[in-house]
Length: 416
Ligand SMILES: *Cc1c(COP(=O)(O)O)cnc(C)c1O
Image (cartoon, rainbow, N blue to C red; front, side):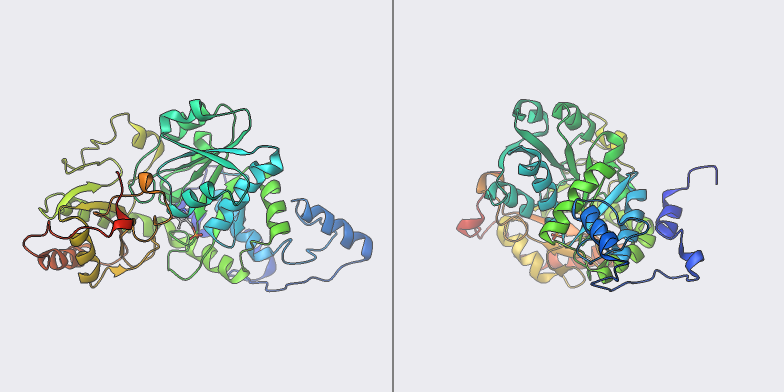
């Protein structure tokens, strides 16, 4: 084939080139935990190759599923192709993936400092600040990356669009400021359909595959797309620490990839309609969406003064955040009143979710960086947009007339 394939085609066909030869059409699942060894010598060589991050030798064995699983490897091949990367490495969760990235670029690389651009997913913010992984973290704004780098900095972490505020960071500018220090971009919100961080110079594109890649709320997983060299370091951490993705999860993710571009487009279209509706609602103080930081006109990309969106994204996605004029009381009432939007954490699935970041997903974030108590996050699914708008309208109509009453619980107060 001559012309490069379009992402929609790659999503359907990647990781399947050997199926015809195998005489099968659907993705095979290999659940073996152990594998026959040809002989002690080749078994031992295979073990050695994979325990240090390599692939199983052609005449060897996969030895043990903590070292290699072909169903997981298939999904990794497919995701790497979608992310324009040489390789990818899958993990038991997004947090297991982030842990492996930090371990591989921290002590294992002779470094002990990480620079992290805020805002970040609450779990990532917490992990980096916890000291659990033996690294010290400097949190900063996107334009403070260069001044935060030290001789012992091994990694720069950035999330864009960020969870939950939909802040956009300029990936190429962060990479330039990092000055050779590897940058990992959490690409969970954009997915490879809308953004390819590796093309912009990032060393790694990380996903909580639990979200859009799986897309159906039934798999917890993480994955990191990167160079083959970085993949070796990450596979080594995975083999040694055991944060594995189960092959059934890998199968579901690989299957989910086939509809990812279609889901993203449909969910994004509904999200844009809902944003348009929200900015005219008196109950809503601000709407945050890529390109929009207030109640300004939309789509005016008034939040894209520097043309970042146009340079690095092919769309604005299906996540929305909003500040309720009635503060915490109104936010709390809305989460209890919606019927189609399930009040639940997580995101990126076929059904719509609503949640309160300060109380839930961003609870472990220190108060100075925690989202305010009036912020709600919406994940728009595949339901009809009119039905979702009607659901929100019903929930807003149930708000008390004097909706400014009711303060947030003490622990939810934040400076932002
Ligand atoms: C959910 C999430 C994570 C963590 O992923 P898990 O699969 O829950 O471990 C990391 N980053 C972002 C942006 C997320 O939304």
